[in-house]
Image 1 (tube, protein in one colour):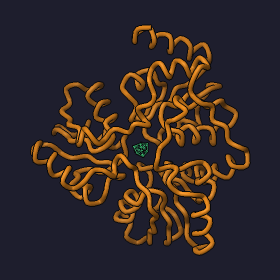
Image 2 (cartoon, helix red, strand yellow):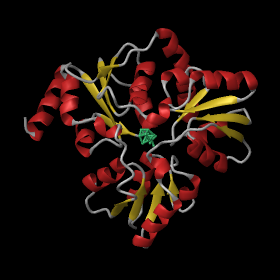
Image 3 (cartoon, rainbow, N blue to C red):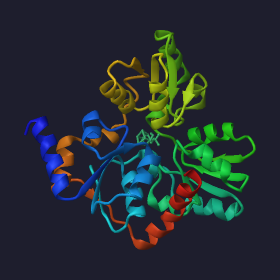
Image 4 (cartoon, rainbow, N blue to C red):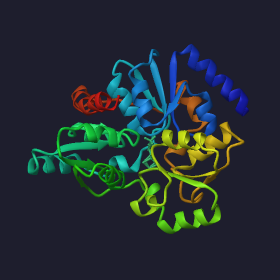
Length: 305
Ligand code: 13P
Ligand code: SF4
């Protein structure tokens, strides 16, 4: 099939089979185009509570599909590619958190949504990069363990000096590669441009940013300014802005480093195969795990909305 035929077939099949397609902002523009809902991790979680369809196809990574299943257990939830896993989501073990809780029973454990359902099940509240500061600021506890991303955790700690934020080892292997030198080189190359960055980048690199926020925030910031913008996050955001708004002047920070191979596993052919039952991966969670993990997502929606 040609690309256009494939797109037509996807749209026809998804309508006939009552399937909603959700796509994260890092997906390729052609995937965004066939999706019913696109957005950052928080927007996709909220959307998951409101869907009318029987089946949901998540074009993103596994924790995003798990979040949909946790919130909508009656639906069939398919991940577009069985191997699309966020490496950061699997960096910590449940037993590490259980041990920490034993040693610090009065601390609140905050999990970035980029975690497995199993990890979420032993945490108190989830956050996304767009909601982390807001949610942590509303928590009654002063002592907070923030997992698994110390870069995002440090960003939150900087905004909320009244909280004691404790961190563990972990990182996004994509964003963590960006160094202060990379940022200074890009600013040197585009001296008239603003710099928008994702808080998964190291603090030493973030110090030069004009704006720090989630993928959705970076897009909003870029669209609101007349000045050119260097985009410091996974290349999907810059590709999306160039595709949707060809007049907008944007530059990708570190083209060679900011590609998330897991996010890029989803293709139009893969989406078609998954819709037709010949690909993708059904998300299954035991009821016990789902209910335990749901508490932290419900708390996120409660504090974040
Ligand atoms: P957002 O929550 O900003 O969409 O980011 C998700 C993610 O995986 C960033 O790497
Ligand atoms: Fe995970 Fe980083 Fe990829 Fe986001 S960009 S999905 S945090 S590996």
